Length: 488
Image 1 (cartoon, rainbow, N blue to C red):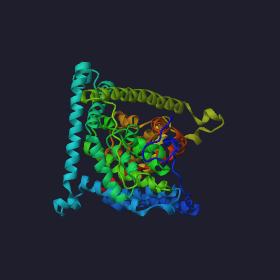
Image 2: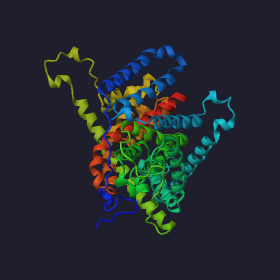
Image 3: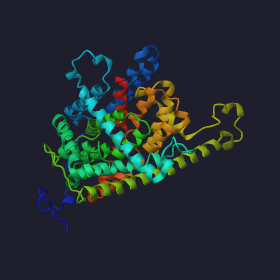
Image 4: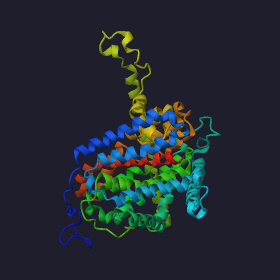
């Protein structure tokens, strides 16, 4: 028997109490067409003027990219007339403000130190150093179990992913479980959420879940607001899902950093994704209901652990499952990418129609690969985050791999594939910003299973919102990268 909880609609089971929502006027198709045309015109204009912009070209590209990505989101909005400007403008301001204090561009040097807020970068640097120390500590455990296989400098095999990149996931997961048991994570989440709630005017439950994604994964963060998920509005559900795809978990941060990614950049993009994913959600699907937690920030702090030791052991178990899942995903998706490359390499126009003259198919590449196709498709997005046009195809390939496979495969490709070792430092850093998120097709299924388990009767809404959440999450990572590209 299902029993109501305090605060629910009287005599109505919690699981069936989906809130009523009013009908919003749809965005006129003429507006959508005008926005798409404007985005295309701006992108083409910047591309045409690139050579004449000189040293300012990368920053102009990225600034235009922010406008273009927001234009695409506006064109996809369910009801552009119903968007709250307070949420949108404060969200953009928070995102750019955080990027400013972290990147500290040269033109800020004349300002007083208190106004430049250099302590924010210092705080992120300390946190990043802490994660590096966690990775180093996990290395000691890996060396004891795997011996020289976990030491690339000592092993004749060099770097072995299973022995080097996966152990940090296990230990960092255990560490975060202990922080959660002690209530430290909840304090950090509540502080972050209250700032965004106050400025952006969003509901407590959705803002808490967004803030939790900085530290937790896309299936763990919703547990912070578990009692409220069944009664969330559709816009709140989209914020819950979209923010999950715009972030990575603490374990994945450890993997990125173990590969040599800048810890401050990884942490910065995760924090920037909080306001970004929230305002993009309200742009794509404006609020049409009355959130139950408007003006409040209630945290659900239930934990299955009895003490710190139990929390550490439970975190190890969860981390092991995640590490095995990452390894299995890499094996499967890299194998599929290799298979696609084999198939594309065997295809020739002459095989399809023998009468095609040889001279008319000289343009067909002899070594056509799946990543080449992805690079061409996503190169405009790579260009608009501020990547040099000569490297846009390669970064576009990484974006495509992230979307089609997952961020693990894309990051392994960036760091280990010899075709990508020649990327400039700027392009590699922008790629890290753009790849820091769970936005891929597989995550739609993961969220349907994870969030659907705590809100069974909202599964249909979750399924309908799945592709929108993917759109929001992917776009948030691109805007994060573009903001960084504009300021670098």
